[in-house]
Length: 120
Image: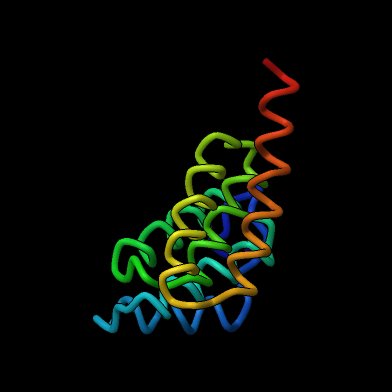
């Protein structure tokens, strides 16, 4: 048996490689995004949120990281936080001229707004 916690899926080869890079001192928004993306694929949204939060802290203009961060928060049923992350990501996308990401995050944010307003 491996070291994996009983409720966690085994690490992918990519995730293990990314974590080795991080442990060796190579840290970047892209690396944190990649780690977060692997956790999302595995359904480990808590670990994904941690990694993606670091990605947007390192580079607050990283549109794709905002989008994935918000999505992970949404999957973890942290809807208010997800809405905030989408809104912040929309501002970044607009500033960077990333119209597609802006449109996608706007659609996702509106869906959460509707969900939150119907539950109040």
